[in-house]
Image (tube, rainbow, N blue to C red; front, side, top):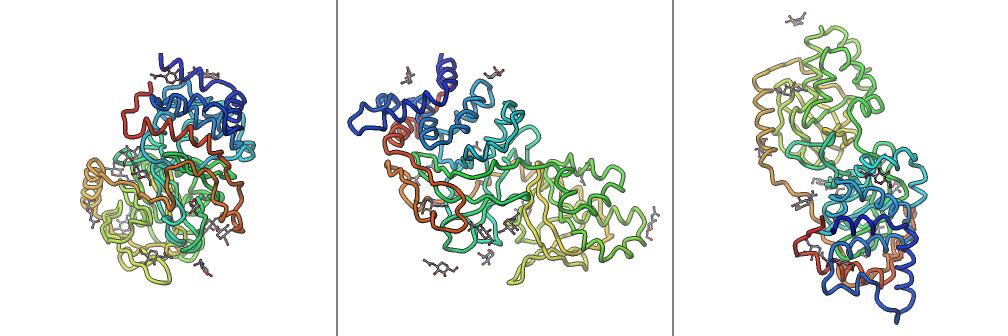
Amino acid sequence: MKFTTLSTLLLLPATALAQSSSAAGGSASAAAPSASASSAAGNSTDYLTAVLGALTGAGLTTLVTAAQGIANTTEGQALLGSLASGNKTVFAPSNQAFSNVSQDTLGDTALLTQILSYHILNNTYTASGVATAPNHTIARTLLRGGNYSLPGNFSAPLVLAKNSTNATSFEIIQTASNTTAGGNATAANLHVYVIDQVLTLPQTLTEALPAVAPQLFGLAGSIPGLADSLASANGLTIFAPTDAAIGAIQSSLGQLNSTQVAAVLSNHVINGTVAYSTRLTSSNYTSAGGEAFTFMSNSTGAYVKSANSTAKIVQSDIILNNGVVHLIDAVLVNTGSNSQAAESAYSSATAAAATSTEADTPVTATSSATGPSGSASGSSGTSAAFKVAPIAFTSSMMGGIIAAAGAIVGGALTLF
Ligand SMILES: *[C@@H]1O[C@H](CO)[C@@H](O)[C@H](O)[C@H]1NC(C)=O
Ligand SMILES: *[C@@H]1O[C@H](CO)[C@@H](O)[C@H](O)[C@H]1NC(C)=O
Ligand SMILES: *[C@@H]1O[C@H](CO)[C@@H](O)[C@H](O)[C@H]1NC(C)=O
Ligand SMILES: *[C@@H]1O[C@H](CO)[C@@H](O)[C@H](O)[C@H]1NC(C)=O
Ligand SMILES: *[C@@H]1O[C@H](CO)[C@@H](O)[C@H](O)[C@H]1NC(C)=O
Ligand SMILES: *[C@@H]1O[C@H](CO)[C@@H](O)[C@H](O)[C@H]1NC(C)=O
Ligand SMILES: *[C@@H]1O[C@H](CO)[C@@H](O)[C@H](O)[C@H]1NC(C)=O
Ligand SMILES: *[C@@H]1O[C@H](CO)[C@@H](O)[C@H](O)[C@H]1NC(C)=O
Ligand SMILES: *[C@@H]1O[C@H](CO)[C@@H](O)[C@H](O)[C@H]1NC(C)=O
Ligand SMILES: *[C@@H]1O[C@H](CO)[C@@H](O)[C@H](O)[C@H]1NC(C)=O
Ligand SMILES: *[C@@H]1O[C@H](CO)[C@@H](O)[C@H](O)[C@H]1NC(C)=O
Ligand SMILES: *[C@@H]1O[C@H](CO)[C@@H](O)[C@H](O)[C@H]1NC(C)=O
């Protein structure tokens, strides 16, 4: 059975893969590795062998072990199987990066599968196509399902930005810390970047909000049921006033009764819609309190308005498992409430998500994605922000992947 063949293969020790790769790659006249030997009839087993061999050859042995560790589960097989179809970007944590991850996590195959899924983007992304800060590119990963389902079954995204229009590297922006994606290699349909941290999965509201907006979190906790309905929302956007913003109007807030406080908080929320910064262009959103939002941006920044209150967005796109948070510098003091408008906005958001065909942003690679030009881009190695070693795929490793992928990409992928 293919299932057995693949599992057996993936469960080979990484060193065995390394040896077969380097033996094959060591000499130009050596027999081609089995992956490319059977390239005419290349199959997905060959493809994965070649990919893992190339990663091993690049020193990413912990990543390869992690991939092998999920290969005997249904979810893990689905993830590994999906690699071969369409162009993908892989953020490959170094062994050093994995050394900061607990053994408990590495041994939890379900969690490990989610983590690895969150390191793969469903398209090709290079620095040239990534937005320049403070703008962001919202890139869809392969992480979806379970606790990570977004409306329309969209997958959880990563937030990318580069520092200047002509930068040769870009950052993966996360609350805890940013990660630079510098050196990269293109292997058939995979664009691989080595990164020096394992990326953090999207947090729940209860995990994320106390860190970025503790006062707001406390205020929300004072309204019965609010925190639960936010945490369980299928699609959520929160404009979260910073502590300083809440402190600035503490005395006025103190004069509001709890109904009014609940209304004000609801007017900081979009229910059923995940409005990343890239979508805050039209004035097309209604709050969970049924009040209209207005958005504007100019050279000083991006702003959100509700009734007569305007706030500046000071940090956008903090990714939650069920939505997104944007930090704002003022409280939107709107005690208005229109439950009918709120329900109608929620229904149309839900209906729109169900039929949405929104694609992620395809970014054309700046160099040919075909051909065994396996050397990593050297230019970005000189950047001060460059924190990771360039990948050194040998051309025969690349040849193996390309040969195997060549037979698969475009054809039906019948892995399992
Ligand atoms: C796929 O490739 C492997 C390794 O070359 C080989 O053992 C297997 O028979 C192939 N399977 C098919 C269906 O071609
Ligand atoms: C997968 O393999 C690991 C390590 O060999 C083992 O601990 C785990 O129980 C296996 N899981 C399944 C679903 O077979
Ligand atoms: C993958 O990328 C290559 C090179 O940029 C492009 O020619 C090809 O059309 C892409 N394939 C898909 C399925 O997008
Ligand atoms: C990747 O993108 C393609 C094209 O947009 C889509 O058909 C496919 O479902 C996506 N795959 C995943 C795993 O998200
Ligand atoms: C990736 O590779 C391409 C082509 O080699 C290069 O132009 C680009 O600057 C590299 N780095 C990033 C972060 O895209
Ligand atoms: C950010 O996006 C806005 C709207 O598309 C654009 O006007 C602005 O020039 C962009 N800023 C940068 C630094 O690219
Ligand atoms: C890249 O941008 C910087 C400023 O952001 C500029 O000094 C430099 O000359 C630019 N380089 C190229 C090659 O355009
Ligand atoms: C991450 O990058 C963004 C945009 O460049 C920046 O505003 C933020 O301060 C950075 N975060 C960390 C923790 O370095
Ligand atoms: C979102 O709308 C649904 C349906 O009207 C409602 O049950 C839920 O409580 C709302 N959630 C929030 C956070 O307003
Ligand atoms: C809160 O204050 C508003 C406005 O003064 C009033 O209409 C409402 O009845 C009050 N609600 C409660 C529960 O006291
Ligand atoms: C406004 O929202 C509705 C419902 O979510 C959607 O169908 C429509 O395309 C949006 N219009 C704009 C201009 O974004
Ligand atoms: C962007 O700038 C920040 C702050 O100067 C720096 O820490 C980071 O490494 C830079 N990132 C890239 C990709 O150049």
